[in-house]
Image 1 (cartoon, helix red, strand yellow):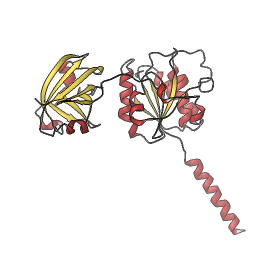
Image 2 (image 1 turned 180 degrees about the vertical axis):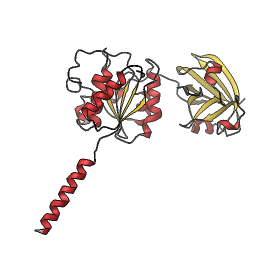
Image 3 (image 1 turned 180 degrees about the horizontal axis):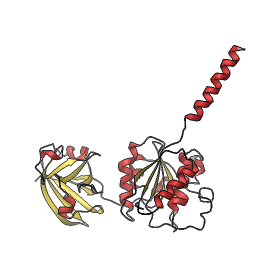
Image 4 (image 1 turned 90 degrees about the vertical axis):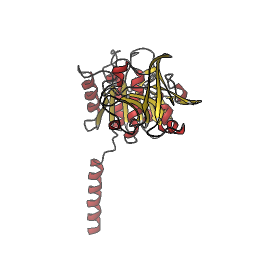
Length: 301
């Protein structure tokens, strides 16, 4: 009898712990909506209505208006620092309400990306691989009562579907029908490459706070060409193939190794080559932008 009572106690404790130990995945939101109105709050409300115990966070809501490329890069910059199983809901959607598809991508590492299939997945698909891709079936994965809304899929489709997936209310297979990996829409851009004694790449984004100029040229490629800290680097920046700026700057480990206002080449937090002015904005001072139309070339002086 005592053994039976002990077993019941252990079972009760196990059930209690099972109730406390949630298997929900984090849900991360990214949009170009800004925070001036209630759009982001509405998306959060939909997610919490699915499950008020969700772990909900923001990547950013300050993607430049309609800038799909910037959204793609911010996902690339951030996603791998989140646990496997995290669900990212991304809404940069100038084609909202048109025939563009709504999809969920599962990477090989088991992270999920819920968004329009308009190029937002370009860099994630290339770096992390596509384990599976599914089109969202809006007959079953859409906020109830929203069928007549055509301009806020971020709330009605993406936040709702992402929250259900993160909360375990649906399995990935219940998102909708499968699509081939090749169906991922990808934006064209200049990949980093060695070209003789030069290295070519692009300016994917700027550091919006400090005006540093980031490139997509990795440390491995840069140093494979023989560059070491202390070396001088000739940097040429182009917009649509037209030279905009040219500078010779030292390759340094950190900003304080040059005088205030002086240029330097350094490795950013992703270990990609970047260009800065110490305590000043290189982008603002030199009129530099970012995106697929902006390219960069590195060489020795």
